[in-house]
Each structure stands twice: as C-alpha cells, then as structure tokens.
View 1 (tube, rainbow, N blue to C red):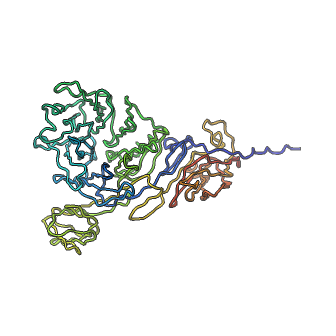
View 2: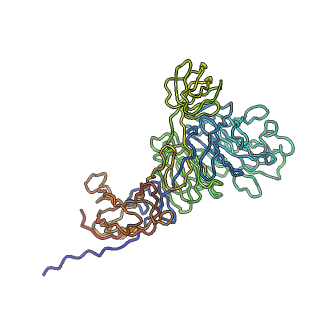
View 3: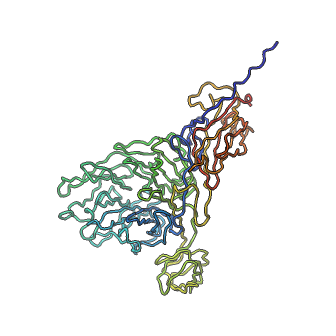
Length: 613
C-alpha cells in the first residue's frame, strides 16, 4: 500500500515584525523594513499616520523662502520672506488663525525670483524689542554665486513698518552668503570666507560696524577660509562664548569670542574639517547636534564632523533630486517625534515636492511626498508651521501709488490707458494681487480705478505673474483643513517587505533555508490604536499583493496580483483572506476623513499554500 502524501504543517500565527523605516535602496526582497509608505512615521518601532494640518492664512506672497515666528506677551507673529519682499502676519496662538497680511518690504528692495533669504533676531541694546535681521542673496540657482545682496533690519514688533537697509557710516552693507546672530553679535558672511561681526547689540550706522572704545572694540572681519560661507548658527562655546559654526562650501569653521583678547584679538577662528554643502538652508541644529545635506551624502557634527549613515534611501534621494534647484532644499525639525525633515525638489519638480526624514530617536529613515517651500519648528507655538505647496493661487502683482480712496478685495480694477482689468484678491500697501487679469497694465504710469470702491491709483510698473500661498499649521488634528476646500482626508499607507516561505520563513530577519511552497495569508488580526477612546479612527483597508519571483512584475509573467481591498475598522476582530503569493506583501491604507492609525502587535495567520507556480 502506497504511503499517503505528506501533510502540510498547520497554520501558524506570526506577529507582524517589520523593522521601522522605509527602505528605498536595493530591492524589496532584500529588505526587512517597510518597502513603501506615504504620510507615515515610526514611533516605538511601529508605523503611525502623521498628523494633519490646517490653513492659517491663504494670502501670503510666494513662493516663501524663509520664515520666523516671534512670540511675546501672548502675541504671535510670523514673518515670511519671498521674491516679493517681507510680510508679517499676526495669528492667534490657540486657533492658529491669522489676521491680515502686512508688508514690511524695504523701500529699496528690488523684486528678484532668484533671492534666497536668511533671518535672525538680535537683542537690541538696553533690552528693548529685538531687531529682525534679514539677508536677500540672488543665489537660488547657484549656491556658489558671489553676487552680493542687501541686508535689512527693523523692530521685530513693528508689523506695519518696512525694514530698512543695514548701513555702515552711510553705506549699505551687502553680502553674498547671509546673516545670523550669535549671542549679542550680528554676523554677516559670504564670498572668500568672509566673516564680519558687529559690536554687541549694536548694528547702528555710526558705531555698529567700526572699531572703537568700550563695546565698540569687538568688531572684527576675517577670512578663515577661501570659499564662500553660506550659513551660520550659534553653538555652545564654554569659556569661549559666544561661539558660532559657519558652513563654507568646502570647510566648517568655528568662530569663538575670546574674552581675554586685546584690540583686534577678541575672536578666534578654527577650521574644523572639510565638508560639502548642497543647500544653504538645509543645515539645522537638533539638541546641540548639527545635521545637513552635502552634495553626495548626509553630514552630522557633534564635536566631530561625521557622515550621517543612510542605508535606507541614500541613492533614492541623491539619484532623484533636481540638482538645478537643489539650493531650494531646506530643513525642519519635529522634536516631538524625534524627526529631521529635508525638503527637496524631486524628479522634474522645480520647487520642493518631497521630504526625506531622519528619525533621531528611532535611528531610521523614511519619506513622504509633501510640497512645502519653508517652515518653522515648534518652539513657544506648539506646532510646526510650513508654507506653500498646496492651494496656491495664480495671481498678478500690480504696484501702485494711492491717488484717492482704498481698493477693496473683490474690486474690479481697470487701467485707464491700457484697458486691462483684474479682480482684487488681496491688498497690501503699495501693491494689489489680481486674479482674472485680461491685458497688461501700463507703467506709463496710468491711472487705475476700482469698482465698486471707487478707489484710484497710479501704476508704477506693469503687472507681473505672482503666486499667493497658504501658510499651514502642521501636526494639528488628522485631516487637511483649508478655507478653499474645507476638511479633506490625508491619504496614508505603508507596505511590508515580501513575506515568504521560499525566502527562509514568513518574517525571517535572519533567513533560514526556505521551503518551496506559496505563502497563504489565512487571517489578519488588526491591532491598531487611534485617537481618543477608539482603537482605530476611521475605516482602513488591507491589500495583498505580490508575485512568484522578484522580477515577475517587470517580466509580466502573469503572477503579479493585487487583491481587492479588505476593509476593517475598530470593530473588526479579524479579516480572513485566503490570499496566496510566493512573495507576499501587505499594504495598510487609510484614506477617509477622520482617518488615523497607529499599529500595535498585529497578527498574521500564515500557512503553506500550493507548490511552486
């Protein structure tokens, strides 16, 4: 009598133990981490949907290249910097809602789409409200450009007052790199390794930038390296304090105050080592450690310059960044979740479209698509602020001088000579933002009139294409909330590595010899927590995909199959699928208003399926 065929082993229950982070480099079959994700972060090793965001205002001129938040006596102010100049917005610290946008653009500023901006706050002498410092340099397409741009300052609390040029004995100061403050000193930097500091709490025309007596003896200018310096940040200096780090295109420099120095000897400069810098605003401090993008790797400085290892997405990032616009990259930290975000233009994008994220706490990398051009981390205001990218409005910029009355939002403006028309979207002193423009206003000048307001003005230039951006409060709620579209779902999903008996076990992180059977998912037991009392907020779905071999999808051998979604919620104890693949992947998806998830110890019931296809 013939022996009966061997019976397959019984189904087994496995905890889903995919490692944190999203592995983009290499192949999915060679991964133990998640292989794809969108709008998902990792906390305690588990995937979690990121928080939502809401509009603070939809009326800022953009694209915004930098921003800074100031908070004092319960009054919160956001300053934004773009090719159009400087604008200020006061917002409610609880609701996040912003009031009207006010211009602080200097009278001498020249509109330039190539400008990058840097800003800082410097305490004024006598403890009066701080100075807002700003630099505009036309190097957005070439970080090494030596063309100098203007420097500006003003009372950070005087929202309706334009900034003015920083001058030295009547001559405006210019610089090709930027500006920062270290302790009571303003420092400007740029071409040929130039570092120039002001006197303490003093950037005045008469005494701020000259060597004299008393605290006027601390001014200095030096060139510790030969390449352009593009960024400066303060650092703890111990007995030599204040101290700053300054990133040159080829070297990192430390500049330290020497309290025992004599005339011309108050500052010391150390070249700490060779580096590269991809973008001037991609440099950020996190808990006293400094991180930045180099031209071909990530860097960290914690007392020593080191490479920040990225085995997950190094090639995926550097092979796909649009290098022409790389100097638009910028960095943001989200300390609540231990994250550093680098925004960058991906593929053919000309503005930042994606973010690659390093989680300091988890020691892993992931990414998301998110178009943003500038931002400010949470400090006194509890949530990060990010600018632009979504809900932008195409408008036309029309500068004018007032003749009579005041233009109003909704006015139809008509040019008396050109006959051009447009509808007013926003009004700031000295300019209108118009939509639906027909024709071109004249800079002859010509008289413009608004109806129904009856206001009149005189143009000072022709109309120019303009973008009006939204400013967003992030990590607020779980949905996108804007004035234009209301409350919308944010799509989030994550996909496992291949789960396979042939590759050495369903979730083997140290592969053992495999068995030649399909892998069948008999049952999935959800374990997700949500916000509040429910374990899952909103419906989710499970999609099973996979193929017979690693190359099956591209080879089109007919074995690559994607299942229909299996829907579940917080009241679903388990999901039976009976799906089988030789190499099986699971995608967890949330795409509903109010949708949120944080994975716990989800359980898979797996069994050997059919033999090799």
